[in-house]
Length: 372
Image (cartoon, rainbow, N blue to C red):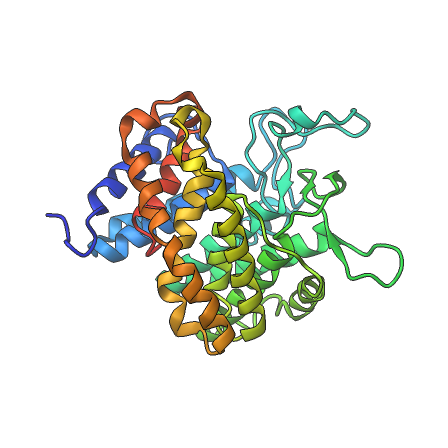
């Protein structure tokens, strides 16, 4: 029977079990691991487990972590290289599966050294994305918090350390370090040298979150402390402009804000950027377009972020941040509007949605059950 406090739990479960079947998690189908959707899926299974008190969903989250590490932590089957992408031996790789990062899981092999850059083709090529790694780091940390097993936080911290080392570089002059947007599978060379608008912020929030969990679980003595990495990310934030009319980016800002209770000024700046982005996005009127002209996962990223506003008032100690939060309140209803649209199966049949079924349905489940 549906819990009235969680009216969408049954639909979230249906979406997630379909995902688990399609991607080979609970079926004999080939493994279809993709780091972004798998990260959201892990958190969804944990949220369902907490809501239903059924341990089998926690077991699915743990199984997914294991499958993702053994698929995306190793070289592709069409690659001449084999084994863990970190270069570690089999036994050590099992103990430290994230030390070399994790592949995106794209269908095409990465662009080889010396091969000319093709912007359109690059979207379909494998490699490593910084912003995908931070999503997986968050998922591992949520597993650590849910199971009280420090090794998942350790793996997350080792991944954060590896990501900072590989993706950051020091430009000429006295500028703060910058981040590369996409790296090769083995993290040896950049594939797209531009920096993602929110990547430094995601990196800093990730370090703060991992340090807090490590302290809570008593895991801080093992593995990297992330002090150097947090300081490096923080130096990138001083002149950052984060406002964007991209719904997925706005949602990411709001999710980051929910982890900044100990950083009042940064929280205010992040909320202000989200407000500016929402005001611009609302003027575009994109939500009146037909499904064939909309991208579900980008809109659902905003819906997920809007849920975070509900927990933010208790974090906002400054009057400036509270004023921004008050200005954000009229936009909260956009989340329900987005969810209702994509809950309609007819809208999910549009090619723009069905072609990316896994990522869209997993993020819809996240928006329906944001407790994960």
